[in-house]
Length: 98
Image (cartoon, rainbow, N blue to C red; front, side, top):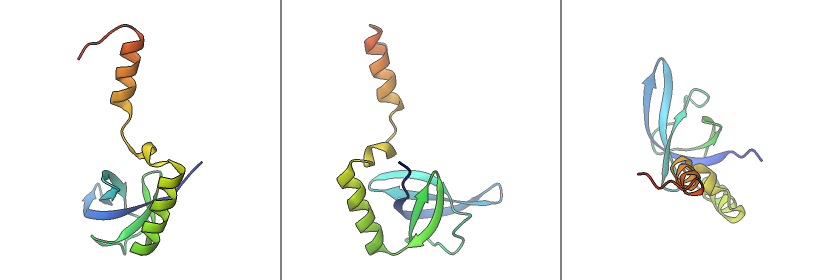
């Protein structure tokens, strides 16, 4: 399932002529391309899909969407899972290197 996830814009910078933002999703901060929402400012909420802010939304709508996502258990997809996956793979192979 593809979802647009609401996040709060923490900062906006230019990177190779593209506006990039640091966006917070319930405590998780990701780098997001802001090119599709040039009107967005720090403190605004945006709807993000596959690394791109696709629209600006109000805070109430962001909170409602975030609650729905929490209810269906999709927030874990935002977290970095690579270290845990690597650890699990090492354990299954009998390795416990750190």
